[in-house]
Length: 66
Ligand SMILES: [Zn+2]
Image 1 (cartoon, rainbow, N blue to C red):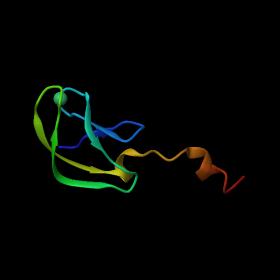
Image 2 (cartoon, helix red, strand yellow; image 1 turned 30 degrees about the vertical axis):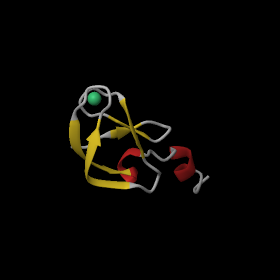
Image 3 (cartoon, protein in one colour; image 1 turned 60 degrees about the horizontal axis):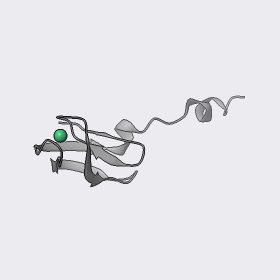
């Protein structure tokens, strides 16, 4: 299962959407990671890659031709 990460890098629980105590860096890759949620006490196996969730600003791309 894929999980989402907030702007500060905290991994969010795929079950309840709450912040977990797991943090990732921009180049962190999680593969079959047992993510434990302190809120709903569910453990979910998650996969996460920063390139899938980090959206690069479009202006940086368009500026090359301007
Ligand atoms: Zn949860």
